[in-house]
Image 1 (cartoon, one colour):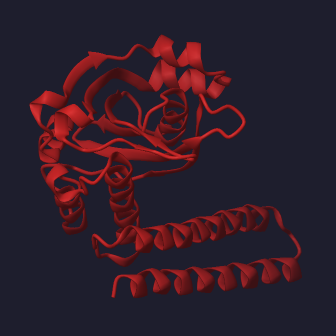
Image 2 (tube, rainbow, N blue to C red):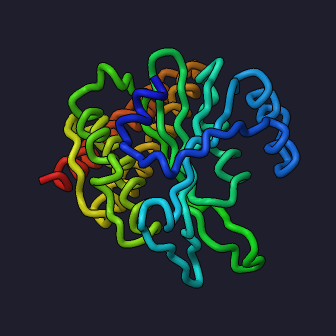
Length: 255
């Protein structure tokens, strides 16, 4: 299914690299904790550096300023034996590879896509730091939902900006955020980048509230006093209402 997804991107053959990436590279370049090491060892199968988008291969200009270095874009594919720790795997892979990076994970008949905004480390300008990252839901490329089909069309290379690599990558990341938004609204729309940034901030708020609800439910299970149970349930209902309001904000952003 990864190949089906890659073909949809419509990337020129001149960008093809198709070289293996060995797990040892992540072990050598990062201080992985035990869970990271276990995820890398057990969950990750084959890793390949499929494409590198460069100025000489797709006629897109590099971008460099005091905060950002988008000279090219790398596209890696990762076959997973187990998808349960995919977010953790994406996190350390983005940290290990000092390029704007598009990660395409495959498991069974589905794929998911991970992106991350990186900026120049002001304390050490030879390094990039991850400041934000996003990941799609799992997509069956041959049987996408309506929203996923819209996303797959929007991320084709010819539908992304060609001004420079920062504009291209920023738009690609916006499409990922918009697909995440569609999970809440039921509708995918390729909007301007600034709209996607606002949607991203709203999604983060929703996720924060959902974590708070999960913590309250855990506390509720252990609580024995009825008065305390009532107070916890009231708090959970209030937070659920807050999520509905935030989701309404997402829907308004698509109008």
